[in-house]
Length: 324
Image (cartoon, rainbow, N blue to C red):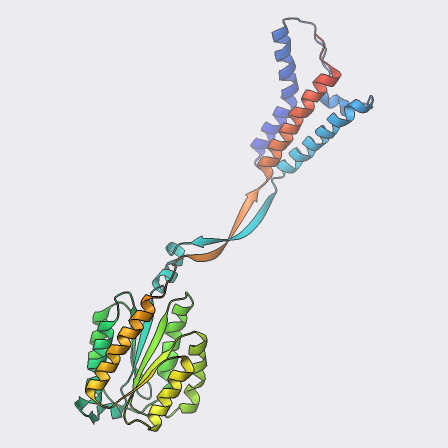
């Protein structure tokens, strides 16, 4: 509490009884006046039990005023719900559902299949897949071989995705670790805010890092992010079994296609199924954050002290008397 307030409080304590007696004298219209100042009661022996209650009130008043002048405060910590704006802008940005499309662009994707070339079919199917998702869903793209060849983080910009899909080229070997680690880093941020996510993986080969990538599947399962796999090739092959393992370990669905038409149709169906799943999920952009509030007790204690002193003064006037 500032010095000016302290002086004001002291002035009130000293002036209150004098002003009250002067007003009483003026109203009575009689000059003789005998005053017993209330604080004098503490400076001489008590005269019986009748002064004990008023002295207790005075003591409480002085204690409250003294503590109030020290301006004590307490800190209260609580949680409040904040709507997604301002300092929680990041939470609002990731509130939308997200789907990551992972496409194999290894050298074998340049080989033919009934109806065309694998990679050409993958481009057509990817475009239909992205176009079939609602505008409210963020879509990411990862093209991989034995490394990540191209990546577009989840976005609502469909034009950027379409341009990236058109740039897909076939080359290199096949490794799953790198694209899955990239996808995992993206969906982890969305899942932190309870947004629905899914991964769709399109491949035609058997990875060279089967032992290394499999430990990542547990992380997708813990995050409740399914990986739906589409294998381009013959049923019963090792590649099909590997994609089946990925889907079963993460809660996704596995599909095997052998023609361009099958591939396009399968991704279109996946797009519709995923759209229904993410559309039914609800997300509140409200986030609970801890807030600390400091409460100054000086003012209330000082006012309590003044109120107690006023009560003491009234008791003193009644018990000791003011003779006119």
